[in-house]
Length: 423
Ligand SMILES: Cc1cc2nc3c(=O)[nH]c(=O)nc-3n(C[C@H](O)[C@H](O)[C@H](O)COP(=O)(O)OP(=O)(O)OC[C@H]3O[C@@H](n4cnc5c(N)ncnc54)[C@H](O)[C@@H]3O)c2cc1C
Image (cartoon, protein in one colour):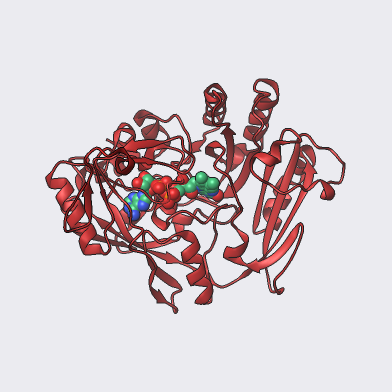
């Protein structure tokens, strides 16, 4: 392996260095070169060099996407050497951080600064740019996805120049918020945050029909409401969910929901088996093992319960081997052109295939159902979209494509997967 002066490693076909795989183990690539810049200048010169050699460039965040979004056969960058919070505007509650900072590091810095993120998802091991630009979300009827908190970002262009994006460039902001690195490499992100808060979390088990009856009430009453529907007794184990049988009102073990609600509280921290109070970012994340391959679509609120019932029915009747829970969450609409929640309050419905089994007919059946209900896929989770589908289901797709082609006419920031969707 030879190493250039700016931290680019050109592989000499040593597979150990050339090969990369994602967290779940279902996506991998052999990259021609790797780069691990230690500052923004190095990052810009790596991108410029790669462009002059006609090499594609992608960043690997924490590799937690199930789709091939982070793959490349060209220059693969990690921004793991450029991390941390860079500045805090306490008056406006805005925080700027390097794009490679993990959600966990960001949360710890906010805690120390007396601030909190508006919302978070189920894990905090992703990089900020990876999580935000794929449209990652948590749950909450009135809360947008994480990218809706982006108020500024820097995009490195193919020639190594930097575009500064903020509220004075609304089109670039709404295009860049959810763009999977196709408009440039993100070097830093500014997020709107809020005063620090503690969350009170409660979990319990309840019958499916009973949860359906209370669906609207629970969604309105709690800042965060979500559940995992478990078709079978052993289903909760696939996602390492706690055994909540002791909290069940009926004693049923199949066709039940593992319900979670979280609300802002002034109460001091405490923890018991099915309840806890702690700083916001210490409550959101749960533990997963890399033993599932997930698909997740955002479905317009009007079809939420019908879509869920249809997926549940096909699982019980047509795919009894599909034993992973359905995860069901809420996200408010936003203005990002490629956000699955673009101008649409939605629920998200996710299912998983078991690694090592042929789960494709199951995932295709779920895809067909959720698309019938107007579903738009999570960019980081398995889906079957084509370039034509993108134009059909995203009203601002053509604007996004025109901007992408203008910024990167040679498609330096595309890959085989992304070229099919966004060329
Ligand atoms: C166990 C698990 C739990 C999850 N929980 C949730 C959840 O609760 N809610 C949810 O919505 N999703 C969830 N996801 C999906 C996950 O949040 C997304 O797939 C996210 O993109 C992963 O972030 P990452 O840092 O690993 O990015 P990667 O998967 O490495 O990359 C994602 C994309 O971002 C690009 N990228 C990364 N950094 C940059 C940069 N600096 N500049 C330009 N492009 C960049 C990559 O090239 C790629 O296109 C989960 C995934 C797993 C495996």
